[in-house]
Image 1: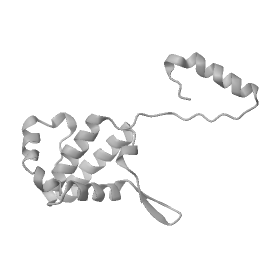
Image 2: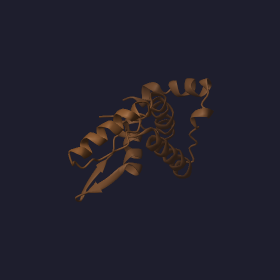
Image 3: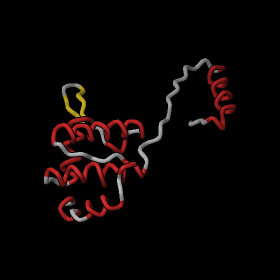
Image 4: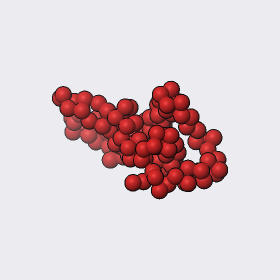
Length: 133
C-alpha cells in the first residue's frame, strides 16, 4: 500500500493493525521517477549535444555516459542502471555528471535546462538524421 500525507490517518490505522498481529513492518519511501521534461532534456540536449560534438549517435553517447556514471558490479558481474528507473533527484545528479564530464573531457559545454533556447533546439534538430541511426 502507498500512503501519502493526505491519507496519514489510514496509514497509522494500517500500522496499528499489523502491530496488533505482531508483524514486522518495513517502510520504504516512494520517490517520483524522472519527469517527462527531464527525459526530453536528457535526450534532446545532453545526449544530442555531446553526440554532435563527438560524431556519435544518441544511443552511443547514452551507452558511454551510462557506463561511465551508472554502472555497478555485483557478484563480479558488471551492470548498468536504466535511466528510466532513476528518481528525479538521481537523474539530475546523472545529468550534472554528464555536463561536467563533457566539459572537462571534450571541452563541450552542455547548457543547463534553464539556459536552453529555442534557437539551440532548432540547431540541434538540424543534426537529427545523424543522431538517430
